[in-house]
Image (cartoon, rainbow, N blue to C red; front, side):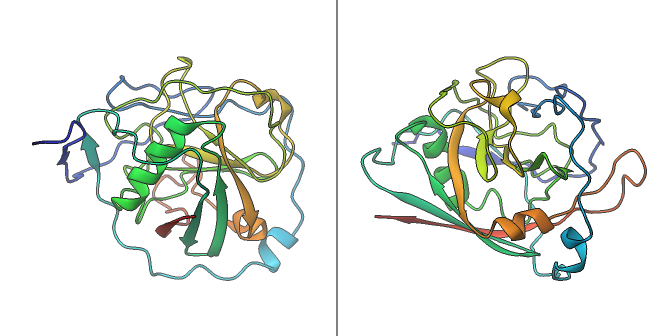
Length: 233
């Protein structure tokens, strides 16, 4: 019996560069997603964000663009604990997932991570003092898994440093595969973007991640995810 999330693989030929302002263009299938611009200008980040950071490695595989027929079936147990170790070219960081807050988003993230969807994916948008965003294998900021995840908003957890949220368009129910880590307090996101994880180790690694600037150098790659390991307890 075939599963409802049976996927097809699409090998990316050429990528178009999308400009991220408040929200990206994209249809429901491609789920172009972005966090909003910060409510105020992010603080200037001092040299510690570069001088103390390791040089990026060259270990990440090539990202493969995959699409799926529908939202994956629920396979996680919201009563259990899940962690994700994200290996990047700058080092590793750990996220504690929150199925108690956002079971559908955690289930989707776990499914995609275990399927290798995020392997080789670039951090395509990094705003020091605001967010580091990844999750799009096309690297354009407008790609997605072919399905969307309904909003699971909460005000129980405010967006402070290290909180992980699901990126989306203006449609609250348009989240897909893209996610972001807040690099500082970002109260403008509270109750507007689904919280599904928290960085519990390695926030300094996240702050070292850099991305291309599409306005000045669209061909320069950003730091990449090597792999994501999910553990369940």
